[in-house]
Amino acid sequence: MVQQVNFNDSAFKSAENVQTQAQLQVMQQQASRAAEAVQPFDAVLQTTVDKGTALKFSAHAKERLSLRNISLSPEELARITDAVNKAAAKGARQSLLVMDHSAFVVSVTNRTVITALDGNSMKENVFTNIDSAVIV
Image (cartoon, rainbow, N blue to C red):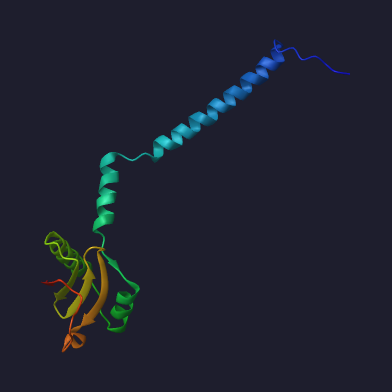
């Protein structure tokens, strides 16, 4: 036996309204979450700029820092970052940074410290594949 469904039936319309209301609620929740996730343009720009200026250390550099007992304070990291910025402004690609009793070979283009040397390791050493030197 087949029962005929009347689409004008109030029970059907209320079920349809409930479904429409639920879909509307889901859409409003998604829009609300999306609005919360949106950051102001200046915050997005600053994050992008910060990522571009962050100094990275290669695995090799990290190993050399550890082996040679070189520890860097936040102030020293800031000095190195400033030196990399200056080298970049002059168009350098690979630079030797000499700071106090340490030296660093840095890929200026990638903003990555490639290796680190202490005072003893710098003596009688020849640095190749660099196009600039910065005394910090």
